[in-house]
Length: 471
Image (tube, rainbow, N blue to C red; front, side, top):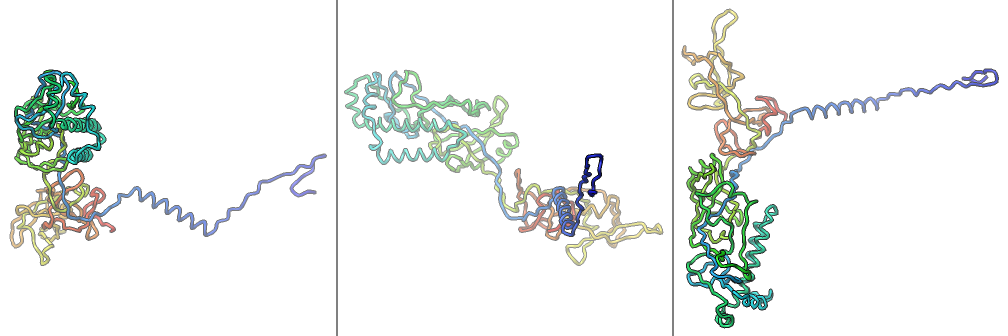
């Protein structure tokens, strides 16, 4: 007879049973499971717990974020062509032309234009002065170029092209009498009727003033600048060039009411031009436009030539550069305290320890006094700011050696941070000198405040007052 089988007529049927492997627990598996459970618990607790991060107080400075885009306004005098033909320029853009200087010529037939094109300067014939001028223009453009404002690349292209054409035209000035006899009256020479800085472009803002400016004028997406180029045809009555004969000019920037009040109180402000980092002082006045907008007028009496080819200028107003202890805004917290008159505060032998005499009712129903140690956080106008966790509203305090009493009720708040030098969240009052979106500059070495290298809680919301902190 086979084990695990039985006989049925002519068949042998085998009964097969599934083998169950016995569970073998050993000490290694138990320890591993315990470690795994502990690790999962610790990780879960870590992500649920507010982590207290320290911040070391250091000295630093802050400047307010005062970046603006301004519109440059000058007294721009437009000179119009008095004939139709091809124009050629003989004064470099941004150069000063004296009264009677040859500025441009108009070729009515186009023959002078063909002659200039056939005999234009090659790259190898540029003088050192011309090369220096081109290098200066390239460096200036490279320094101020921003990819977000690619249209300036086209302005630069036309500026360089115009410069090269004027260099080419200037080479014929020495033989101008020969050219006049060759082409006769078909070439008209046009001379400056006034002294001024010459500019070869227009944009429709030539007549803009502080009285007519509106917010729409600051929309650079709708702004168009037209560059005048030599060897191009102009019609009589069209602009030929423009000039400015005054060094005084101004920038208009759009401001809100708060900034307008601040600038008006200043009177004068130091301005940094982002294009070349030049700094200059400007006289400030506030203008209210017809559409209700507020604009600051920054008046300059220098640098007009430097920026004569710019209508929009990015500037920084250098205001409020404060120096002190630099802390993050996230560390700042407000806390409420009770105000106790200084005559009710008792000083012990330790100058940093303060006490009050508080009345209380004994078990026998009698009134008695007890000495309570309190923490003082500030002293303003003869009133001490005392921790509200020790003194309660309605407590009756007694003067030392006097029957006069004071009932606690008056409270106020202080702005401060949690100092963690002693291993717990110790509130310290701060005096903010200046503050931006991320940091604050606070006064150092105050009686109840901070000192350099103090450790404070970086995120004040992660702790409570007097909470014990593991450092």
